[in-house]
Image (cartoon, rainbow, N blue to C red; front, side, top):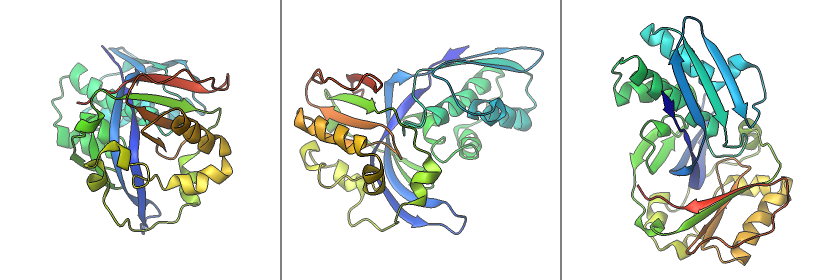
Length: 273
């Protein structure tokens, strides 16, 4: 069985408070970008094996979220072993949730493959054990995320209908942990849901990603990408997650921009679910 784990962007990201467990409460809007996805295939097998191609993933295989997802699922359901093949197209360390999507789609695919009939609620609990934004990918629809990011409420954003998006990632890898170490939590004065109800042209000065305050001085390439988007007519541009991808939203097909050769670039029409 084959599925295509898609990525996400964050429309606004408020770091609200630091928790007693050392993590942070946030407020954000997760928005799926289905045009950019990895390829995940799982087939039953006598012995477990994991194969990965495409964009390289750093670290030991046992630390890969897909492998962790399989072991967690097997622990709960006692399912058989499988061969997992993952082809990476979504860049890593990009703030696009590629690893989280891969892990969550692994749970969904295993649930179908072994006909274990776990409910959405059960899968959400399981996904939350793998990562804060994994739960979003269970239903993979635009949602306001609060708490650790796993308290989700669906939202519709009709203003994005017929718009286009361009994703640009400089040749950087930003650790989520490092990004949070430098942040300063604060309560927002207006909710992200309220901002997203406004015309897109009003988002520029209201819909903020708090990570930009600390990451732009450290990585000036990111702010440069954002400024280039606005120079070429974007109606909104922002860092996604904790970086290192910046996206621009356009009313028309994105213009041809001469990005640096080692930059990752992808663009498509936005699919409003």
